[in-house]
Length: 145
Ligand code: RB5
Image (tube, rainbow, N blue to C red):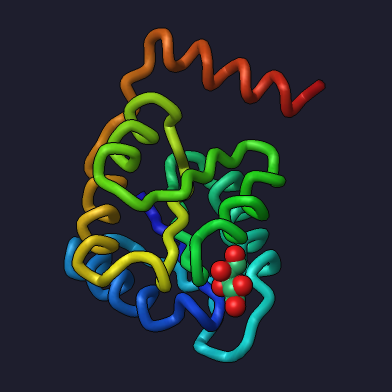
């Protein structure tokens, strides 16, 4: 599994902490920017979202001030299921039930310890499938209508 990661200026420091964790876990990481300069988050969200959709099985991580702008923007791309992750329960269930392929986090709303723990949960939790697959397929169908 390759991880496509991006941030705006508000998320840069947290992104570097997340990248260090991903590399420690031996994962292949593609850093889609920014490098700390003032950046419009929709542009970065689109880069990561396009890459995740083009590479099924890969995942994305997006970090801005709140995580909200990144999630709104990423979810405009067909095939993306981006979830704003701010607590362990929601992060676990967005994998189990929604098969989220991108996690979004707020650097200004989450401390480093919580953010890194949520990344571990996002990476380690499988999709449950079954009735949840039917529901995810309904979302995919909506994208095609
Ligand atoms: C940048 O100041 C801020 O608006 C951005 O990081 C994000 O929080 C948007 O949702």
